[in-house]
Each structure stands twice: as C-alpha cells, then as structure tokens.
Amino acid sequence: MIGAEEIRANLERVWERIAAACARAGRDPREVGLIGVTKTWGSEVVLAAWEAGLRDFGENYVQELVHKAREVAEAGATPRWHFIGGLQTNKVKAVVGLVHSVHSVDRESLVRELGRRAGAGRALEVFVEVNTGGERQKSGVAPGEARALCARVLEEPGLRLVGLMCVPPFLQDPEASRPHFRELRGLRERLRRDLGVGEGVLSGLSMGMSHDFEVAIEEGATVVRVGTALFGERKGRA
Image 1: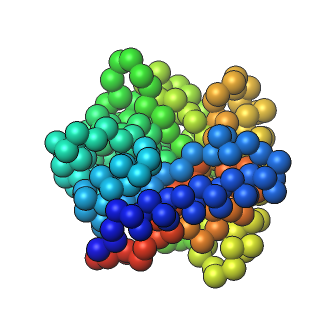
Image 2: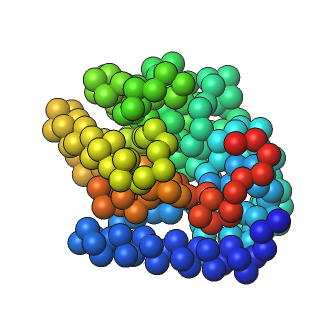
Image 3: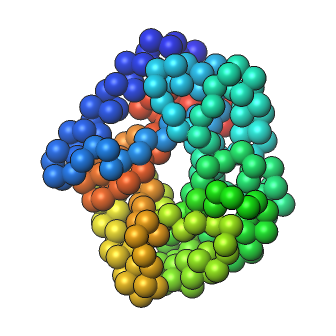
C-alpha cells in the first residue's frame, strides 16, 4: 500500500503541476480546486492525504463513501466529500447528508430527488454532467440537452448549480482531451448567457483527471479530479 510520505510527495508534485499549468494559461492557481479520488482505497489513505494537506476527496460508489466517511470521521478528520460517480435516485438519501457536492447530475429525476432530500441551510452544490464524447457507455446529457437540465436545477431551492462536468473519452495523448474541455467551456458560457445567471452560478468546470488535468486547466477547469497521480494505480475494481 502507498505510504504517507509518498502521498505527501505526490501531492506536492500535483500542486506544482497545477501551478505550472496555471502559469501557462495566465491563471491564478487559487482558481483551481483539487479533489483526490480515493475510490477503492481505504480510509487510511484518505487520512494520510488529509495529514498531507488535502481537504477534498471524491468517491464513486455510495456504499464505499458511507463506510469510508464514517471511519474517517471517527479518526477525527473532517474532509469535504464529493460524489463523482453515477448516482441512482434510491441512493440519494445516503449521499446528501455526507457530501459537499455532486458532480454527476445527468437527469431530471435525479435533480428532483436531490432537491427533495437537500435540507435547509447550505445548498447542495451540483454539477451537470455533459457527455461531450457521445459515448453510450457513459452517463451525462448531450450538450444540446444541458440547458433544460440546468434550468431544472435552478428551480430547486436546495440545490446550487455550480457548473458543468465531463469525462472525455480516454486516449493516451492528453491533447486529445482538449477539444472536449474547450467544448465544455464554450457550452458553459452559452448557458450562462442564455439562462441569465448571476455571479457564482454555472461558473465552475469540473474536468481533468490524472492523465489530462494540465490540459483541462489550460482550458479553464476550476476543479480537477485526480486519483492515480496521487495514490498510484487503483486496487480492486476499476
């Protein structure tokens, strides 16, 4: 298993890469949030990354999130959890009370259930997932359907529409992801204009993973979701 010192060193390298990508794009590194993707890794890895200074963690599976969040809380850590995988409506109840944001909102029924379960006070932050590659095996709305779903999110007082998210088709060359990131940025700008939203609404772009997050930052990412570059190759299920 990866050790605490290796995680600390990897985290420092990732932050350096983020800063370098921001410098190339003329951006402030403080504009980019880093989510450590810890799916299939145990709570001891989360705690080691927490001790190294990482504060945001992403999970793909509800049962794993619930179990891990409990263990991490019992150890005295208070990370911000983000749900980044496909979410069934019957699992929303278990997720809403744990997470700071949901990055994979892809249908009206999910919006309705998230809005129903979100409590008073702090609104649950959500990203609408867009399937920029048109891949049948992936979730996300088609770009042409994003406006209607974003408008539906805006109708729910318990939800805050933070931005858009995408997972481009995986290709070895990170540059192959650039058109997808550029498309998502352009779509966000059109939606902000068409929906007439104010400051802080639909301003985020959750895009970029271990192999392409630098390209994503150059194209405007405000959140990158990084697993392998921090924790190594995943164990267990992919």
